[in-house]
Image (cartoon, rainbow over the protein chains, first blue to last red):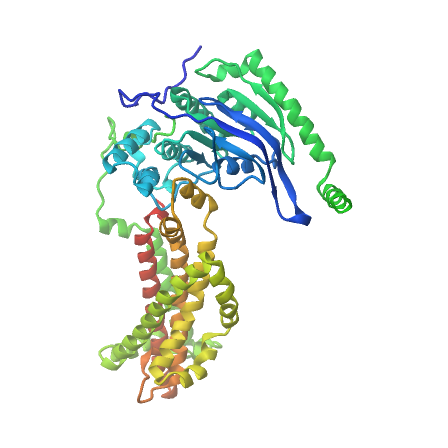
Length: 296
Length: 291
């Protein structure tokens, strides 16, 4: 079997890979709706699940289901209507640097260089000595392969480089949980594969608890320990599949019978969900929903 | 990593390959096709104008409209006569001073006002409606009222110039600040940014491009407005002069050449002002430069 590229080659020696705090995140009967009264749209209904410490939980679902809402809830950008989300037993009430989000496309600040983007968080809070911030930022930028590009602005970096800079930006905050919202969307197929492989190595190195939201099943199977398949809106959990593929992951594993089985299982559910939303076309459904609400 | 560029390899001279000569700045300037196209276009335009204006003298037939305009050679001759006169330069000075004063006041008031509208809902609810009622009123419609409001003509002209830039600046700042990507704010929030951090580190730099767009457009409008205001106010004892008055008095004196000199002077002044803003923009926003 061909050995994959190891992006950790320029890892500073003597850095303890296990010095990373890990979170267990529990979602308990979490629901979320938008709009008020008449136009109320239920996005998430009664989601209960656990993101286990040191595991990568991938979430897939039909497009338009509440994946991003789920990210916003766990990140603390929004509050659930009912239910609660606990991080290591403590209720999440707002955003915090114990949970870092890597957004769809890029959220690097365009007016800061890659390096300054990375040091943005620690310098903002001032919770780390400047010299240490500098050392750590340089180490992380080296690690993601951006050592010589650290003084470039995001506009002058390729899509893959931007994503790697963002990983460094997230990791310097030493989050207990890393949340990735379709992080490799918008990359070309080749770069995307490289990023998936790179990211897997990164995850396997220190196993930081990770919530990985994607719309690509193969990507999800490749990176995940557990795969959560969501339904259409209002979003509920349809299935949780344990991915028992060995680590370190390689792309060859995706053609194994196990991977094929997982893929089929997930695809069947997604297909069912897609059909449901197709048959129940928008306007009609809205009318029925509004009408039944009025009657009820 | 697949994305590592191979620039170094491309620059290194290989065997049998000539080392590329380092070109001087002048050489680069001379090879700049954009510059050459610009020069050819302007020279071509002047030639066309000269020929059309001289058509009657050369061929006995006057080309409609453009045939009545003084030829550039005459305009140049008149310009050369005027150039050493201090009155001409005083007109330049007066107009430029008014433009920059009105423009500067508009920036100083307009940027904070626009930002306040963008970040504070109460402020927006109270001040946006009256602002939107005043905005469509053309600056020149303010001239009579300004003359009554303000004790001196000079102040009236400055006020009208200020109005010309103010509304454009505010609308641009407001629009720019409101359209900042929510992900930047969220990312900063989760890294522990306070409200003040968000304003200073995200909203302010995020609005900078719109501030410069507003400045460039506003600068154009102030030149338009100052000229018109000068023409209307005339060359009274209190105030007056300026390129607008220069054009108007030349027109009254029947010198079409001098009118054209005034017009071209404004063109040059406007071009220099907007170039200055563009330059300032690229200095303040290095992240937007394309290589």
